[in-house]
Length: 458
Length: 119
Image (cartoon, rainbow over all chains, first blue to last red; front, side, top):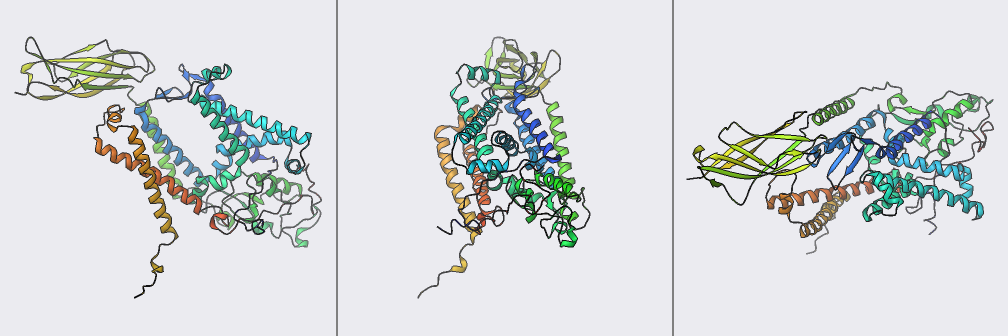
């Protein structure tokens, strides 16, 4: 038991709670900006409309994804796959160039944790006040502050969950359902589930997600090289560390530039000491850079004792930005992005499936005419209504009849009966026919599909 | 005749890890496969597929199992990787966690850096 309580060596010691101190500075402002922009997009985007649809809506029951004026159908699944590959490759590229930029500024875990921390600071105060409050016995002040924080956290988490569901169900209707207490079972489940996940990850787990649960944190080192931007403490300049007055001469005291204030440790959201070297727990938020620069200013020392740097720079070599892996990532990324943009713009916004009637091979009509019947499924993937012309290519003997008239509203799926009639003496057995579907109005959309036409075999 | 236990032929930790990953993923995929196809007939899926893509029932079963197995394998292997790797000197390597960084009041031995109101 005594071993389990030994803070340094136990396998099962609970992680001490991290109380990150507030920090101001250029990187903190950048992170604040990233939080506002990214969460602004998340919370506001579903409220905007585009072409009569919610700007971003993943309509699963209708099997349609609306993304800023583009409609993606199940047939466009390839684009979703390509976009995921682009996202992954972008992460590789950014990581190889600038290290864990994603972790420090853009990861949802970081972004939401930051907001939960803001709320915690507003209610409970900065680091020292929070430590004192947690250590103090329960009294009216503690109950009031803790309850207020929980109310803010839960409210924000519920709003987050509501917005999340709003990406899958039209958010305005969802809002009405919430207000009138008519929320469906699945909507309620996902709203509460995502709220709980937000509350748990950003309020309770925080840095433990990055340290123990995140696979990217483990993989990212594979994308690092000696020219990747990392946050590092300049040991040669800082050591030996020690306290001193501003008027003291560090050289005379045998000291480096680190004054041992431990502020870099206090601002760290993952609770590490950057002076121990590059660590897997470091999410590269640069809070330690901001705080150390301010300490250096206060002491009239040169900034940059902790800084964004590279291993090459630290060892006195030159940093190379353009290196083979960066170029390979960049070329692949550009090619994929260009490919996706081109193919999205050249999508044929019409699908046609021509299926033979399975009940009969063919019908003999008076006048030695052979008729084949087909079921036609026509999908208008455009955002405009269209009237279609359907014709058989390269065979003037075949007459084609469609019922009802092939007209479709925007994004409508229609089923039609197609009759193809040809003289009996046109041939024998199975014959391939190409059928072209084209719009009679602007813009011109056309697609050709093949079908089999059957004639008597004897 | 007594034979010595072939200790030197036993698997090392990495081999054991992979054996567990492969086998557990197989079992999970098998369970998933039976449950899935207890509920869904592949013929129904093929006939309502978004594109005409008639692959036949046997191939559908085979591909579905391969897909489930790959998915389970990915999950299993990633779990192994997450448990076996981790913060250096962290408990994942069984060496105990890094000791807590030393923290004190910034003003301690630094009279120019005062405490809570420090900016």
